[in-house]
Structures are given as structure tokens and as C-alpha cells.
Amino acid sequence: MILRVEHIGIAIKDATQAEDLFRKLLGTECYKKEAVESEGVSTFFYKTGDTKIELLEATCEDSPIAKFIEKKGEGIHHIAFETDDIEAEIARLKSEGFTVLNETPKNGADNKLIAFLHPKSTNGVLIELCQEIK
Ligand code: ZN
Image (cartoon, rainbow, N blue to C red; front, top):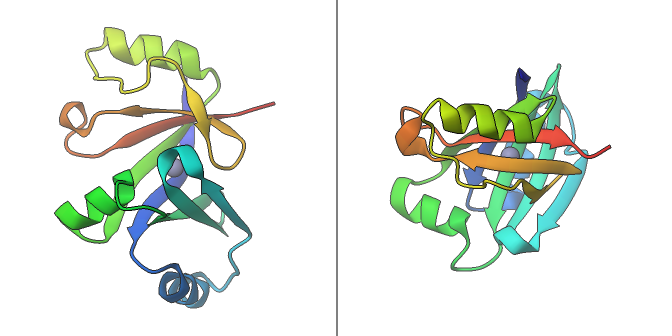
């Protein structure tokens, strides 16, 4: 089942500018930076209470983040929900009619298995399911 909002992903153009902004906004430093080469992104994590903000910067021109920014500009890219069993959730949501983009979970940033739901099946919001790799 879905447990909580684990993080909110925000597409940014310039990590130097955005890191400064989010440090001021949240009053805390970025605690983790991680490149996910398979996705063409660099990620920057901030903790705020029980949840996190994940800044996403493209590392190449054909990165999904570069395409997102080209189409929509900077802004909220996805909402990630933590699950206790990502494979069971993928199966459940598929049977409920959602379009699952990753039938097999893949490795994401922050030591997680992740899978996405297509925004056309979720009122225009890209949804990430995630589960910590134990
Ligand atoms: Zn994410």
C-alpha cells in the first residue's frame, strides 16, 4: 500500500541557483547529491520535516528533465509516494486502470526502487512509486 508522500520532484535549470534558493527557503543544506546517469539527471535532496524535496537538473540534452523544461518550464515534475511493496502496488494500480510506465521497478536515486505512472492516467501529475532498497 501507499504510505506517504516520500518526496516532491522539482525540475530546475540551474542547480547553483536552485541550491541557493532552496537553502534559503528551507533553512537547510542539500544533504545528498546524486547523478542518475541512466535517467540523464543530477538530483539534489533536501529534508523538510517528514518529507523531502528532490531537485532535478538535466545532465544531457535528451534527458527527460530537459524535455520537460522545454515543454513546460521549471516546476513540479513529480510526486513520489512511498510504498511498502512496490511490485504489489504496480499490480494493484494496473488492475485499477492506471498506466504504469515501469512494469518492473528500476533503480532510482536515494537507494530506491522506483516506477512511474503516466500523467495521462493521473490527472496530469507524474506519479512515482518508491520503496527503499533494504
Ligand atoms: Zn523522485
